[in-house]
Amino acid sequence: MAFLEDITTAIKLQNSSFAGDYSGSNINSMKKYGWNQASIKVKDTAPIGTVVEGNIVSNAMASGSLSDWGLDLFKPNFRTTLLRGGSLLPYKCHTSFKKKYVVFCNTKVYKFSTASQTHFDLAKSASSYYAAVHFFVNDSNYANSTYASSATTAGNGIVTASY
Image (cartoon, rainbow, N blue to C red; front, top):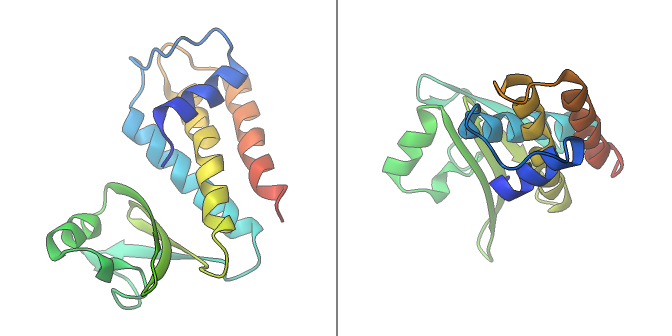
């Protein structure tokens, strides 16, 4: 998950005077935006089928089974919470009986190929830069479109350099 320290580092790459003041930001929204944009970028850049995007509709997946999306890994109450939308859960399960790499983000679910953990890890690495974009676009104290553009370029670069 994009930890606040990672996001702070990404922000400081653009604005070295940033001292960690998130008072004008919604940190949850930043993280969701970061993971969503990173997942979309990997999906759009990687070979077709590497990342499959699903939709949560009316508290259920729009297609496929619970197992297809890794939802069978969770207890019913937690699964229900995820299917209500509004959550952020990057999840990597790498056990002898099951392997799933998924990101639940609001009403989207991104399922990453299990052939290689690299695709999920790229989204993880890029997510903090996209979260910084959200910060520079929406923070009432630090809004700066030039910094947002630079953070977008950095996030895109992490993903595109690997394909």
